[in-house]
Image (cartoon, rainbow, N blue to C red; front, side):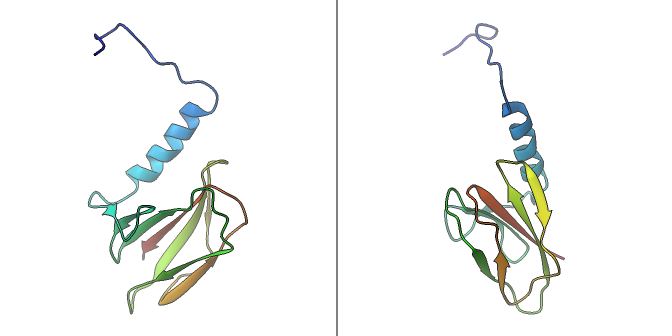
Length: 111
């Protein structure tokens, strides 16, 4: 156990910017978000989904979306700390083309 004021951590390099980027992503999520259908997907069923792909380099990521609903999607590059909108809206059985690179996440939000 540490006493208050006895030790301080100093963030170096890109750590502060990376933590800020991740905090913005989490803060934008619904408060009711939880793990969905697998350990790498988090969100609210039928409304919001955040999927982290780890070091896997998929060419596409597929989603089975609720019938009659439309969604927008974004590709999050967690290394470059960028967010790229996917063109158009998604519906039904949707597939998102991905750049071939590791550590991407995909955010899908009902519109």
